Length: 314
Image (cartoon, rainbow, N blue to C red):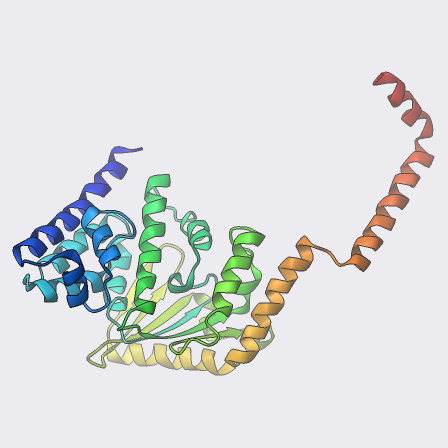
């Protein structure tokens, strides 16, 4: 492991020790503090204090600061924790996303991090050009999965996702990884706060083909936007430009399939993976006949060589 990778762990551990120190000074037991933060379980708090599991999220830090009356100390320290794990250009976006009450996303290449499975996330994050080593990769995977805690917490945002059809057709991480990821998307079908739609290939060219777009609505009703390419992101706060981004998103959503039809397309994509892995009996029979004919043809064309090869192997 590189020296830089070894330097990452103490930052998370310092955060955890600070939480434990503040908790003890306030006279809380872990279970009591967990209840006071409304949504942070005692098990998760124990992980944070020990520096294990997913890195703490900004929402965790804010909740702990409020419960411990620690003057935003943990929130300020949290920025140093995440700066060791995620690229610097992504930090402003993650700060906004962690407290947004509504998240609207359009993605042209990948499933959004908030809905990624572990294997899918690992395959995507492995593509980063700035990735140093396997240790940092695993830190980023844990960090990405940790961000998903917001979707199950009491302050869960409304999440609207529009995916280009290419996202569900490309087997990121291989067929097994993709099958699990598609199942994860299907699990959102009856979720009260998550909606997933597919923009089909049949819609042709469209304004969002250049990259991914996220629109965030903050607790104070302010709206911000974020555009992202392969290794760079841009935070947009100017109201006029954010409004233009909102129009682009609305157009994409209007052209996308309704949720029910989108789920059917995802199921069809999953069935396609299964057919590729387990061909139907009719297809298997045709394949066997073709292979048999090819084998007989080779024997007829090269019978003498076949007999000679047999002798040579004795």
